[in-house]
Image 1 (cartoon, rainbow, N blue to C red):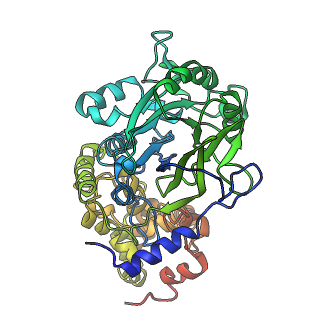
Image 2 (image 1 turned 180 degrees about the vertical axis):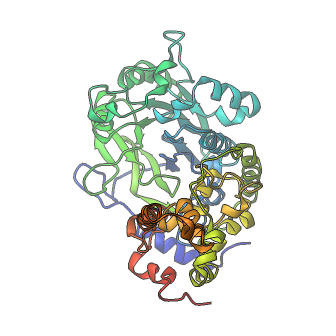
Length: 491
């Protein structure tokens, strides 16, 4: 299935509207150059994301659509790199599995030429890389880092410092590109560092990125036509690195300038390109050309939205995602045998709140778990936390096999836990409260009033799941009317 020419024209027009505007310190669109052009695709800050959650139509991301963008330029004429931070600091089984599949995608079906290792990527630990490498060697074959060392073996690099790739452009002689990876050393004096987990410090040591690059650059340049370094760090650290390694041709950073986006930026004779977005939502593209004075970036880079609405999914990537969803069943957490009773469940609430329950079953909230089952994501912890009640808490939802009754966005998701409230109301309903002595009954009724869940749902409650990432156009004042029990939702 292919887009029509008209649709493709609209797509290219959209890309043209996303270009960087040339600013101080950047190359303009009229840089003089000659010779064959090489298309550079660059991305970073993937944060373990391999597909959008699919809650809303306006979402971006997904390796199945990223693969489609790469396919527009033959691999022999393009350079594909990830600047690092492809995993998340949230280290748990779900994230580890997601990261494993992100690596398999980058090293396999996306066919990236090099993948940098950033600070967050080290949190998985050596055992993780050893296990992935044993089962899927292609997943870690593209990893590079020139300044990350094994703590147990001082002086030994944890990953290859750099790798060489060959490209062939328009019948010219093969073009050799040397790509190195680097990460900023941990700054223990900064305020941000005080809140970092830094689990990786038990296994790794991060040295000076500038010293590492200056040491290997002569060897890289000896056999390469183009030298590229990938860097994970802040923008000031990026500028400092470029100035410290003037012999480098190109530096691709995970951070961008704090001011208006400009680029490419020239610092110390090194051209810097910075990643524009995170979570795999956009793919940077730039045209590189070698001239009399070295390599330049022709015109301005563009950002390609990785859009499920505009792109046709790659079939091989869909198969990988299907395998990922199937394997998430391994992440099932069994419900505790004697859980603390915190949640009543919508059916229990509906005994007294009949009309409100009938309103709820007409809303998309009622079908929230069903949408995951239809997609095959019913074991995906990232999705389940917003599609179920009390995910992995007390007597809330644990897995689709044992806790189906707690599926969906239920009454207590919005109004708060209500088991104790419901249990006391049951004593009122069956008349047990009338058998109490006056003093106990008065105390009981006071507690009952105190336990009444709030009827109004504040915006902050909704925004826990309706985040800008999941629902960019969420309007609380408009959407709350659709679940307001004083205004029955449409059938």
